[in-house]
Image (cartoon, rainbow, N blue to C red; front, side, top):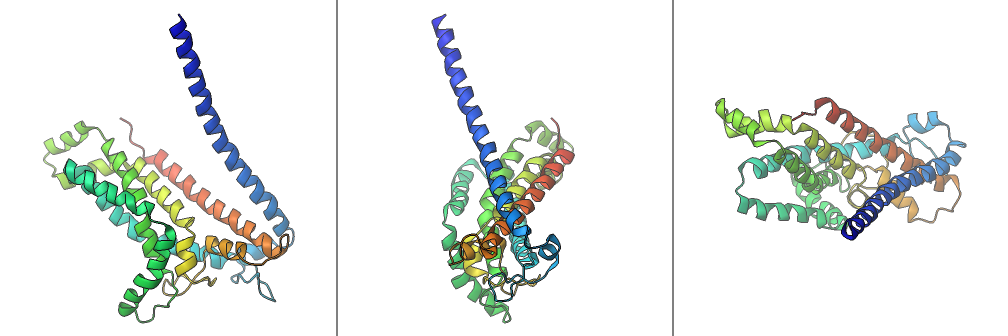
Length: 296
């Protein structure tokens, strides 16, 4: 009887701790949204939404300030798109190899090496993009600027491969073996089974992996702050310097902008824009997972 009582108390403590952990995550998120919204409200009392979302110049620190967020949004989406172009094929290829082809010993070697990529400080990645990758690319692309969107985009793509491959591999490993065996029984090869059976079956988890990768790329700060150029340009040309939302927030936060001024409040306007972009991608990912999820 005492054992059962002690067990119930222990389970109750664990359940309460888990609930408080989940609740704290929700409260922190709500707190972030409240702070961003409150501070942004002061900005939008002085700057209209029309100017903010349609103006193509972002120069809030100049003598004649312009408050169009589009250059920062285009820079953010451009570097993120380049990162995805790199990470999607490489990450999926690595996932298929580790899940369907690699022997156990090889997997035990490759997977920790991949995960080490996530442990490298982003400052190191930023200087590698600026001092190593950009000069190499300039040999093949003479018009490439010293600061550009291409180099940090490629490096960000390499950075998010561990996130994509790890979650995607778990999703593919979760596909029941009898589905693979059924495919083999129909005469399909291992490659056909991987791409036509396993990947569609695990699409929910793979989509989640890429949404995590997108969110990681959108929120990246140091790589773009170091290698992209800190020049807010409304462009889709990856050879030109750009500035992202996170890069601008770093620039103003580390500067001498007086607290409470309209210039200072721009970091909260940029922050809530970044939050909304990330939220939209997560909603799209949730919709895709719900629509294409396979039930077993």
